[in-house]
Length: 63
Ligand SMILES: [Zn+2]
Image (cartoon, rainbow, N blue to C red; front, side):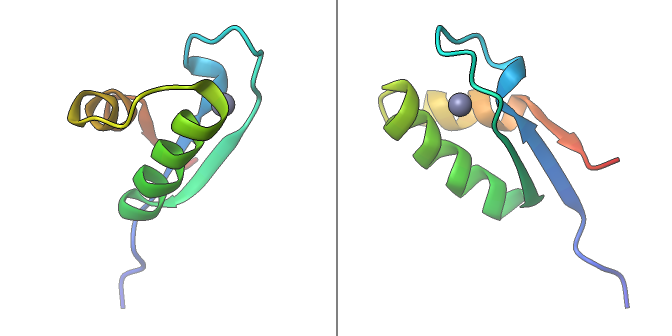
């Protein structure tokens, strides 16, 4: 049985003033959810479809 593909969101690739080093790994659905929450809570972003799109754009396949 094939495992769900895991992706990684590396906060260091996101321009930020906080030098955040968080990396989130999991399925795309999991990562999107957590990364969105993190962007809002820690980086003061507004929850929006644009934010979700930006996060999706920085997802990478897990190595
Ligand atoms: Zn961060």
